[in-house]
Length: 569
Image 1 (cartoon, rainbow, N blue to C red):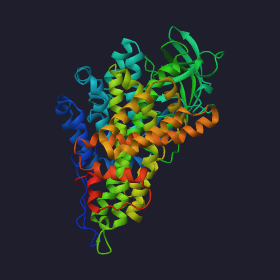
Image 2: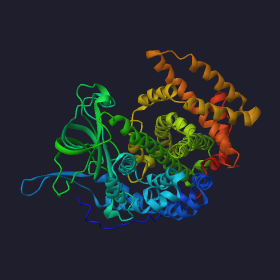
Image 3: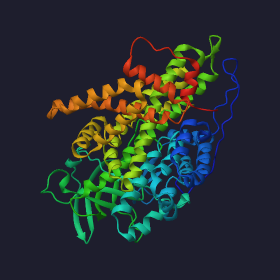
Image 4: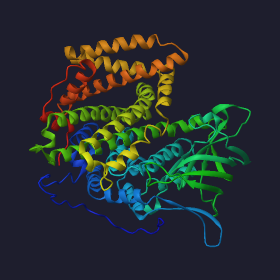
């Protein structure tokens, strides 16, 4: 095990042999950006000309790193997860977390991709103010195709920057933000959100960690945080109870914690143990006890949950992008395998059941891809004062968080099955993808929490009205072919108006929101179809059959699968 200062470089490029007659010169993509016709088309369409000029070289670079370098590093960091060093030689408590060198190489690649710099560097932020989330999520998407653990610390870092920018003092901004938009890996500060406690879990209002005033905005925190991901972060935001007389979230305030005090001493926090997780093993999650931990209050007392929601909301979008990225990697692994694997006298993809399955997976992938990037555009517009898009984002972000996580699990499982036994072997990426994706339905609020949040969004915002207006306009513009979807939408809205309150309403809402999600995904595919993207037509055919004519079986063709996957290699 090594520390961050031991920056041993070992980039590893893949080489491929011809294993025999079962394969024909297997040589997969060497650049995930250049191979992905769908993502490249979308970004070129929605980026400004200035952002296209600036970011495209960065995307080509991170696309090459993800395709040729990062797999070896990711597999090593996953195989050798971080370890906790509680004490030094002299018996002093140090609570240091040590990482395999591959972890730091992956961190360096993230910094050099400029996923944070393009959002937070003052000059770049001013230049790309209206598309900052689009700009930051594009390299993150390509990065996450090759590494599943570090996307959590990266997500937390951007979320921490958002809180610093919106709620911290000017002095804190000037001191901390440069460490986030730095282009030097050794200067990077990563962020963390210490939220979960044993007492409550998703019920944050049951949190018990207590904050006692010390001087000015500074407090001492005492109590245990049960699930602290990116436990080695330099910038930590945590909720603690400042008023025990106010129940629930009303008694919680938000605090900034820095593990190193101004004089260089260690801020007292005891790492009890690191979590032995099923997946995302490369990064450190811990149980941490705060013992008079020095913390600075951000905002007013009692505003903690409201302020932290800004970070949680962005984290949910990161969760969705990671799900889409993981699903994309699994789909193209299965697709590339199917194009080269020779079985029963022809390539795997030429068998009807195989190409029909790939067409299904590509259709489902396109649904989550376009919906997630629509949510990113909505957040960009909301941050720039568009009230209608802010209402849409309020509903759409929990919707895509839930939908993408569930679909990604399915897409990865089915892609693994298509590859057969070789897809189950730990030498490849599929087992790690399967383990890593399983946390995404849980992180940042499990699926049931998202249903409740969508219910609140429909009651407290105009998000549903904005979404329905957009869908209705799209379906009407498409004419006769979209009439069945318009009729389904009208029927759905009638049921939603009659939704009862209480427990029955919550149960019914789950199924109504699932239908709404699928209809909105179809409407987005129809919107993008006007750009004559050849991959959308077969995906729409899949969805028309899936939602309107589940039987008899739809007849597909091998060429449709090639078009729907939209991948060159």
